[in-house]
Length: 150
Image (cartoon, rainbow, N blue to C red; front, side, top):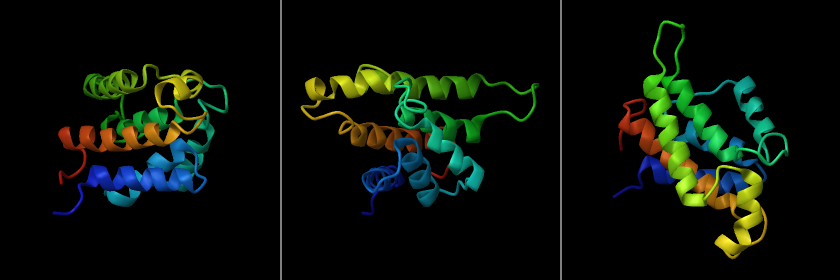
């Protein structure tokens, strides 16, 4: 049996992160590689700003930010007459699942606690956040019918 799309996206995202891409970039590039979703060069460039919790500020995790953005590109609205309730539910699920897994959505908190939680040094936990978000956004997008199921 072949690997699921979620597993392929996850493995690729971690590989890209380890090769030097930021967490946010890794998630987007891997998602694009294994799904029908295509992102413009401008959008890909835009993912670079989410490094280390938005420009190094340590706020919301870049991998999580990327996942939220990717889901928004599929479930977002084009006019103010459309509802965002479905998208809000989906990204809240991602956010809540992430916080449950990592005890925070904040990059500085996750990296500070990585030695206590994972027994590893700062930013080594990022492989885990990239893996988690990449896997989870594929699952959520499939559940919503935004991408093809396995």
